[in-house]
Amino acid sequence: MSGGEQKPKRYYVGVDVGTGSVRAALVDQSGVLLAFADHPIEKWEPQFNHHEQSSEDIWAACCVVTKKVVQGIDLNQIRGLGFDATCSLVVLDKEFHPLPVNHEGDSRRNVIMWLDHRAVSQVNRINETKHSILQYVGGVMSVEMQAPKLLWLKENLRETCWDKAGHFFDLPDFLSWKATGVTARSLCSLVCKWTYSAEKGWDDSFWKMVGLEDFVADNYSKIGNQVLPPGASLGNGLTPEAARDLGLLPGIAVAASLIDAHAGGLGVIGADVRGHGLVCEGQPVTSRLAVICGTSSCHMGISKDPIFVPGVWGPYFSAMVPGFWLNEGGQSVTGKLIDHMVQGHAAFPELQAKATARCQSVYAYLNSHLDLIKKAQPVGFLTVDLHVWPDFHGNRSPLADLTLKGMVTGLTLSQDLDDLAILYLATVQAIALGTRFIKEAMEAAGHSISTLFLCGGLSKNPLFVQMHADITGMPVVLSQEVESVLVGAAILGACASGDFASVQVYCERLCTHRALWRGFEC
Ligand SMILES: Nc1ncnc2c1ncn2[C@@H]1O[C@H](COP(=O)(O)OP(=O)(O)O)[C@@H](O)[C@H]1O
Ligand SMILES: O=C(CO)[C@H](O)[C@H](O)COP(=O)(O)O
Image (cartoon, rainbow, N blue to C red; front, side, top):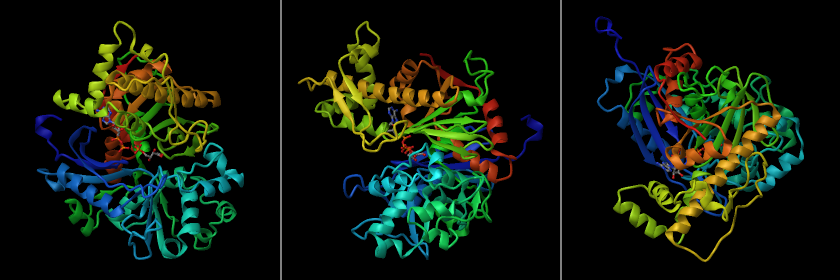
């Protein structure tokens, strides 16, 4: 902008609710991130495979981080707010108060987390119906989706939860309701996790067949009968109460939300890579696979026409990029698996002490330790005798088998730091092989993928990124802006504000303004 024609600056706030923490960012009109804050959130595991959270705790964390990122900014310049979150199930009563999702009756724990696997019997029965809707979730419904969890609540907590429930929200939709009082759901969450069709709406026969006919009877009012595309402006914007909570002004635009992986996909998939000699330069956007790597990894590929990939979720229409079909592969635990392997090893206390002494994270320490012990060989050769099968929490894609378990072969009696470093490497390699397995399944079904675009916490780990390049044989592109998921959330706020005509218009604008990319070659 030239000096004489200064317009007031315009900012957008993006809020990203991950599995372990809530993050917020203040983003400008070019998608540049100006301030960042994060805050941990509580998790409970009252019994094996039951994972719960508190919607009140999550909202409180959203308020802490939002207040931090807008400090020192003229609040009148903040034009829009967007949320993304994990696809956990939030349960509220008819007056919007939290209801317990547990046998203990603890109503603070009113969220069944996305990775909760309690509803095994329910999902098996849903899959036995062979309902035609299942072809839009890769042929097999996942226990991590909402229908089996709802059925579990009906069958197990009838009096304390099910009969009292007034509202079942996907977490991204809970947040937009909390901010605006509008109960409309995002097309993204309903299509990807609730069996809603962008073209045909709800399918009564499915809900009747699986024993959840209650929703049909009340015209889906408890799970959403007003559906908006991600980025659409909700009601009259931020309510006075939510504005007080968040430290913003009432009335600013609030967008229909996205699931976290989809926000990450939106943040990176349209990136301008010109001038780096990458194979995807000049190819359609459908040649890119966005991989959002946090607690889990999600593999987001888009296409002009629907592609049915066995064991890979979708095809979902307009659930991430408007006008495109989405296939979503995934690995249910990746960051969580690496943390589990490293923290559970006998040499972990020694690793922690040594990393702390060098003011490094344990992963930076392990990466440099691997460099020391690999000698002249490529690092991958350290694991010729040690192999990990990474399905410690079942296989989301492409085997779509929640009963699978993890495995390590090639163990010895050694428990020293070298042993820990090599086990860590084998785990990272196993995860990268899982990505290759998913990519190959997508290609076999009709996708044509040439480049990976990584984001999320694990993309900050150079070993993780390099292994993905080496094992898939594809270049990996990282955004200059590390917090791409938050950029995706802020894009929603920018669209809701009306400053950009559509999600694509803002994506194009921010991508041409941010043409700085780091590539990892295989
Ligand atoms: N700098 C880093 N180096 C290595 N691993 C990292 C780094 N930062 C985050 N991680 C890993 O990324 C995972 C969390 O990613 P994040 O995107 O924050 O997750 P979520 O969205 O699920 O809360 C954790 O397993 C963590 O160990
Ligand atoms: O199912 C998903 C997206 O469809 C995600 O795996 C889930 O939302 C958790 O994400 P994260 O690993 O970023 O916490």
